[in-house]
Image (cartoon, rainbow, N blue to C red; front, side, top):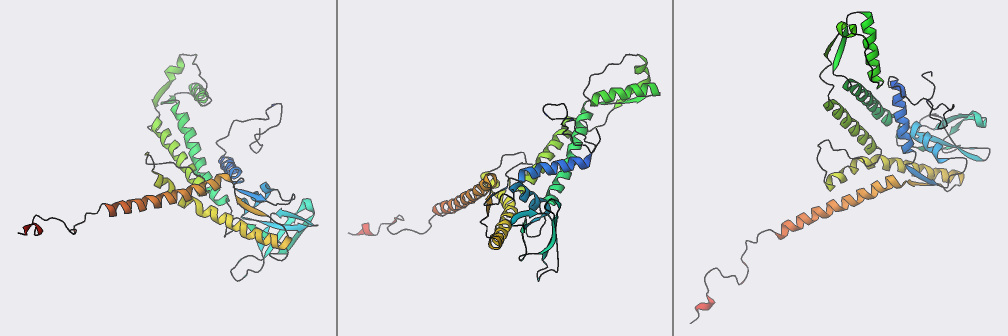
Length: 336
């Protein structure tokens, strides 16, 4: 199978799995697959109501998240979400004023003035989208995947084979290949042992390296989820986290998601005003739960803080003598 051929080969396999052996040497494909894996998750970040049938939510969000924006254009009486390029003479705040689109399926193309001939829906204030963020973490995770694979392969043998001639080298190569493929191979000739010597195979092939790489993978994935507004706490301290520490994690998670929601809400108001639609958007359940948990954690932290302050005030010693306290003398009792 060619390297560029998708692994989903709809041949004779009734499950349509095709060739599912993953090629870890193709680093570019690995990174792209990790990015796609995350974008599949983020497609469910928002819930829309009132979208016309000509604008499926999955395509609208795909455009907005990957390109940083999507144009909303009316073509022959129907609204469509479209990819395109931003340009024109910048406005006073250096924002684009023209959207250029081309859609062969609709036989439509043109340069449209934003807010007059079309509207756009932004992912964020800078039109960045999620691809830069996803690409950064996907690249780190891909490198770590490859390292884990190599450490796992190295773990299969603790020695390095040295051959004195080509025949023994071929036999040693086959032996190593069988190890990589997970096969238990046998040696049939005595000269194999005479012409090959074993050397220690490095110092980093132990379980500690695999453990460290696994922890790094969990850390990177958790940080990625956090930046996308998903709760995924991985504690590098290897200790339990308090409720306060879990709540503080939301300070990192929410600002980006809040901005993404705000951009969509602001831009949909403009779409509704231009085209007479009634489209609205909100966070989906998983992301909405994070916001609710964050608000609850903040309330709990405030309550705990106020409780500590109140308790401290109640326990302060009262050094001033109270009226009627007996200091050892009883003047009133001295009356004769």
